[in-house]
Length: 374
Image (cartoon, rainbow, N blue to C red):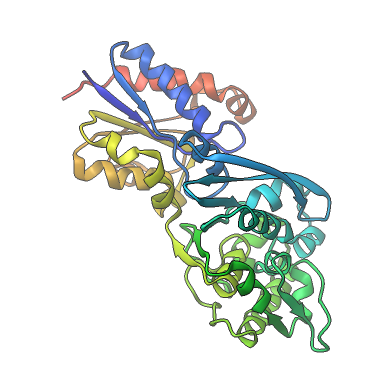
């Protein structure tokens, strides 16, 4: 019997990874009624990670926390085998704001810290923090504040919340955070390698997506430099140039410095929980995908991760995406034997987003129909 593994990431703005996998599976079933279809939705540690974890058997804990601009937001985290998986975007995601220069300076990560506090209170033995999709560029200062840290100016007074306030920060009191952790290990799940500071840093690369103009980018970068120094004053290592520290508007830097977190590949960490490796053993075909298959997809994103697992097993790879911005040579470098972009078969971008599930089903059936098992 032909085994087809379906392992997409989310189609941002349209479908979760779980929904995308279900739609693709329907298309494969249309083309190959007798196939053994295994769905393994995946994530790279960004938005949508909790949806994938829930499918893998995690328990979802829901609570209300302080949002990135103070309004309460309904957030959640996942618990699996004693490990709490906290998705930063659930508390301070970009979807909670209308990005502007003002929000770029004001947004904070206090709610992320509240999720971590709740997980610790309920006995988590390990914390995994995913950091993509945040509205904030505060270096994780709000998160550490919620855990008890003092984020202080030169006079010993709290500087307030938001990346912009860090222009006044002089020191960080981290002892309360270490006491609250009480030895619990922390990992940051990200496949972003950007440092905290500079032209490839959190403010310069991700700030414009969050509403920051050139002036705000410069101000935030300078503020984060002060924050990195303040963390050192508090006894933390220098995180300014650590690869990945700039992820999530620098929340990764705050976790590394203040929580002693290690940086792990988001895709590898989540894939290890979804059974995708076992499913690929003996598979005849694997189908992956995400909203936009582009240059970023080649660097640690789900399609590249699936390709890296499929290639040594000799499993052919197909790709479906909302749009494809890679050339034939780049697709071949991933091992993709066939691909299809939904936007090429839709009236408009809005139409593609609104009808993503049906389009995925149809395109999957067409791709698979043209393929012959070995």
